[in-house]
Length: 265
Image 1 (spheres, rainbow, N blue to C red):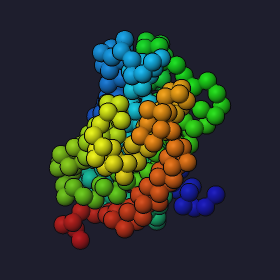
Image 2 (cartoon, helix red, strand yellow; image 1 turned 60 degrees about the vertical axis):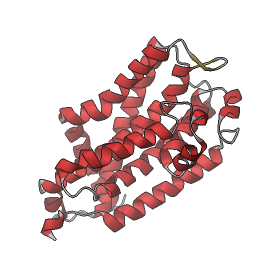
Image 3 (cartoon, helix red, strand yellow; image 1 turned 180 degrees about the vertical axis):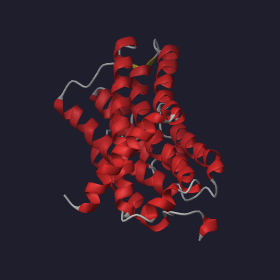
Image 4 (cartoon, rainbow, N blue to C red; image 1 turned 90 degrees about the vertical axis):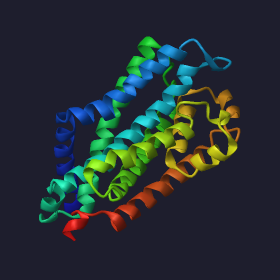
């Protein structure tokens, strides 16, 4: 185990403890997706997205993907500017810890929070809204690799985007609209193919659309794939696009991440 990885794993333990100590982060990143699931499940529980597929069964995959986006992109793009303004990052910069170890700590924290959040969402969905869980090993494996690639992409993009807000107090106003727009155009709250064509093409540039599509292949029957934009799940393209965003996100992190505020430079 290299020193960078070891330091990153040590940092991840601290990140997890800090996350669950913060009421705002727990409510915003952890409880809000669960609340949305309950609201949508209660409102659309009896409606069908297609023959044999309820709207709740359709929405659950997208909400899992949206929760991963919230935990990885939105939370970190707001949290890191706060750490920067408080001088936390400046103190870390003075320690013998490479930036990649800091990134590893954030990614592992988001993974752990995502696993717990997904498990809670699935427990509620199956117990109260008759959502059917994956029934084959292949489907569970797809859930695993889509989550791994999607969370990594969203987390790295969130770290990179954290350099955009000039001050921590402005971060929510800058970051939240981006996350909301991505959720609305990526088939989280609406059936994706019901959206205008130009909106589908814009969504296809970003990872959330592919995360939601990969998740739908896990929770929906194969017959539903004809309702996707390409008429199939396109799992090879899902893997390709998410892999590209992992690389792009890492490159943006290394190019744009700042330990100190602009006024300290």
